[in-house]
Image: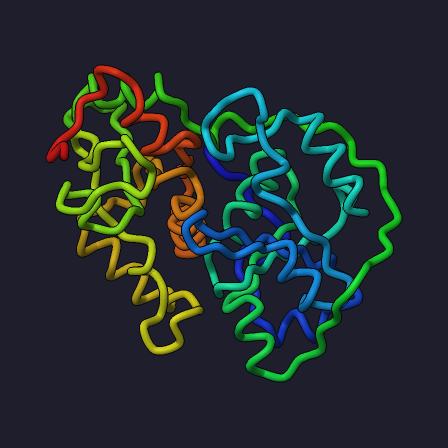
Length: 292
């Protein structure tokens, strides 16, 4: 089994959040690509949902690797989240400053560490502001809580060896896991270069291109497609929702957007390749299709 059922919806609306504000802890999970020159913490300091905590994806991570933002240890996670005034029993509601983007990475991280009550705000801060809902700025007083050190759910995570073994098994193996790549299609095909210097573009053998922006409603540009549209999208890519699916991307952020969208439409056997393309393409001897 990959993902456990939870007593809360994985995606919640801004309206639901407004109506249930007293029973949740909002968390700003904003993160931006280095080339955008945006500082998510400074933006949080200027405009955030009332009483929101900031989860730094580039701070709460494994600092022993040169990969961008791999999962922290269970203790590192517990200490960091406890310092944000969150306990394992709290309903954490994550949002970001794009709409639905890096908030899903924070969501997945909480899920990996067994936190049951966690959701993503569909449309995030842009939708919240658009609707004129209350925000605050400036310093925030947070009273730390004790967060019990969790066990990492290995079912929800894949590493390089898992990916190589899956490729070696081949897509006709009964154990084969479908790998969906959330990077923009030109990087998948090898027609565009990777944003990280020295990293080749192209894709893993047998992987399927599902660019992360394809799950976003083109009209709102910040909320997810509805369930029927999401199902049609994955069907059009010949993805079998009943079989195991592993999500990958550039560095483990946008893969979690696909994870969250697939979970929303009922896929159960889901995992994320944490190192994603940065790790895979950076290793000598990784088979790459369309390498450029």
